[in-house]
Image 1 (cartoon, helix red, strand yellow):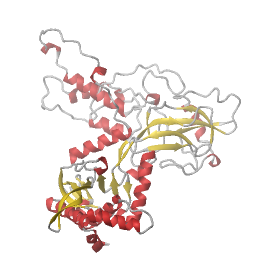
Image 2 (cartoon, one colour):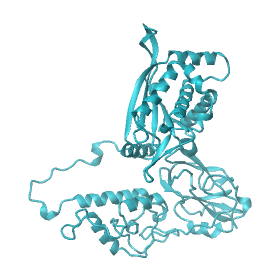
Image 3 (cartoon, helix red, strand yellow):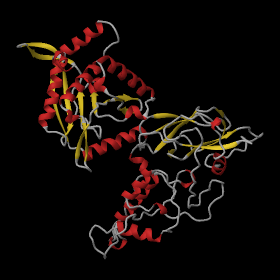
Image 4 (cartoon, helix red, strand yellow):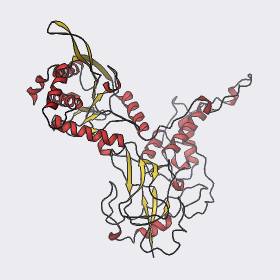
Length: 490
């Protein structure tokens, strides 16, 4: 007899808690090999092909393309071993069959698994299956039977004892915290909470929501982040609505156009959503400032041409600028740091992991060159080329996109001279480089046409003052104008 094993969405690393199904690579009835990619998912960091640790016949898929699943949710089931005739034809549809997976998982043998694959699940032997939480709703359960208990209304309530309304009063209109506390007291205390993601739990705590009162829209009633956000919006709308007794008779309200008439709505998901979250957090938390200077890059361009004319791998301009950056950070380590506000400390980092902005069809991404301070210009060029190509193909891994300590932003490729970029949280600074163009310039006391570039530094004012930031930027400009200055630090 075949054993039906359930494969769940693994931990993709770097604290990611959910992923969106972009494309299924297998169908029900397909035979898959161990470690064969079965689905392509998009996380907040990158596009990832997820390999299956089991070899056998796919009997069910969970979730359609475009569905967002939390880590730990079922992806598919695989029948391992000899298949009975017609077993595939009677396979359970997506969203069912969890019971069969749990019954068979304990009996898997090491020969049916690979032992490597992704972060978060080793496949030397299947782990004991996690108990599935049945939703307290009328939705079908894993065995297809509908629960007899009706779904409770999605009313937010307080998760903290002793919460009070903002006015600190015990009489008058009921405020949000009081209403949520009252709803929580009416909720059954022993009802299960169908939630896996710690992100969802934290979001609920921040908004004082009782997860026991939410009906999840995920597989088997699983509560997703979207469910919590929808409940928050509904509660805020209800609390902000005026009381009927306070509304005086007035002329009838004009009909409102449908929401679609106000414009196209584009979901903030995947990479775009991650960028929005990070930039918003940066603006909220980092008191940034920007300084800039024009520099004569004629000699730097000539030095690069001489290097490439000498033979060997080509040296990119970005690599030379990166080498200048790492030398400047060695002189001004305050800018290669992060701020820990909980401990009220500035953490100066020993290594320089240099991020650089790369525009792709999927949006702006910031790959990271690890240990950039220890690399030569030739090594930096090779790594920039590799990461840029991976970014264009959508094959960057989460490790390629995280861990940066300083960012180099070459917005000159867009044909612009200057910018005041937003710092890539939790870093402390970003160097911006504009286009290099011929301009009138006073050189050796005479007016001449030179290759001029604008350099800008946006920095976290908590880690240093303007003197340090100006010293960093001036050193970078001096190296651009006179590359021989850089030789002193090599």
